[in-house]
Length: 194
Image (tube, rainbow, N blue to C red; front, side, top):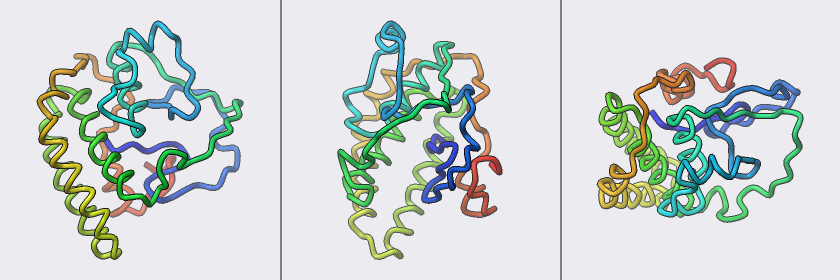
């Protein structure tokens, strides 16, 4: 469905660090806060998309790397010093806007041809449910941010479509199971359970 999640953090759940992710292994995306990339790979993949601004551009880049046959790895022995929320606070409505809009952009640009329209349709429905959830949490500014994100998505969808760089190869890191279903309906809050 194009929802980003990672080992140790799924939606609002942070796992306690017990060294369970200290290994080196292939992953789907690396966060920009700790990404090291070969210069030629960065530029051949098109670099960061300037239409994104500050959120999820590294996921888009990593997906393009996968689509071109390259690998992304996590090195568990590395140490990263990062101040989270340096650009926008996690509870800022503009961050909600960027996350929802940019995630949709990423799907349009990178999802397999045979899945892209179904994923977008389902995502728009699920985003609507997220908006309702924000209303029940008395966060109407976040609901408004999702609506604004959708209108921006509609406005720029054709432009994003022209940026597509997909591959006919099926990447083994494309999860066909919905993390939303596993997390919210099955209570799978840890990466190893998904």
